Length: 302
Ligand code: HMG
Ligand code: MG
Image 1 (cartoon, rainbow, N blue to C red):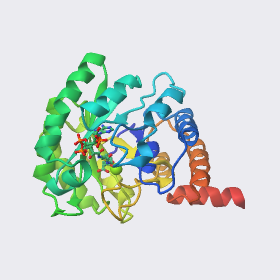
Image 2: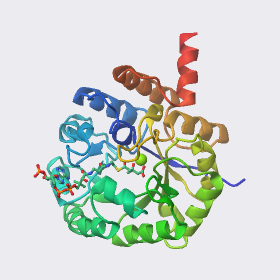
Image 3: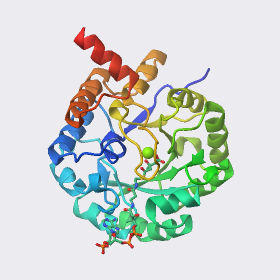
């Protein structure tokens, strides 16, 4: 098996992880989590979203979060932005990186952002223009890259088409989201290979949710196909409010444990991430979903 020597992890727990929590998460808890994750060695920590608070109430305090976090040199704190209004918020909060998001299936795009895929790109145009003006980096997300909760199976060619549009529009990287976590390694390899015909592999990231427990297998499979950027969530927190039943992202602790075992560099400290995970899980009153986090917690208690 041929794997990359080094991978980049994008920690999405504070955004993807917390956006779906039922009870409100105070600004202080979010700030403490983000600071603990950057201190653990993460070079990218997704910090929140400038979306409608009516749609995603948990992200309503992202402006305060951005003001209070300790911005470490060399660490990116991307925020999700769906439209010009969100971009204004990101600019006011002095964000240096944003992420725009669309989908490979029409039904999900509409449920998530109240517009078609084409309309989502129309909304991105002024966002990209402003990003250029303010020197902000832009990452792109494609959701439902394997299947849609409303439309069913999604053709890899459709994912490739949307990914290419994001890349050509100016996204420095396109993150491929198995939003509902149904993919298996064969599906993910087929999808990644199709996208790689239109976007260079080194510009692609994998964003796997773990609903069916396949994320680690999927990561291993696409890593063999040249993917070297993975979105992960501390403690395996999360889910999308507009994809019912979808569980959290693959746990950061699980991916680090896998990479450590393979001798692949990533620069993040497992124990420090696990500690950050235990703290936020205690604040949320829930157990970590990550198996490695659970094992480390049990070892501490023994
Ligand atoms: P809309 O209702 O079509 O927007 O929503 P609108 O432009 O018609 O405006 C309606 C109201 O929303 C107005 O307020 C606007 O001011 C307000 P009102 O006059 O009614 O009081 N509004 C905003 N407020 C704050 N920030 C904004 C903003 N824009 C409008 N940026 C919109 C369109 C996109 C805003 C809405 O659908 C929305 O916010 N959706 C949230 C989507 C979301 O955050 N989903 C979760 C993240 S994506 C995800 O999890 C997937 C990912 O992880 C990858 C994967 O796993 O697949 C990335
Ligand atoms: Mg997600």
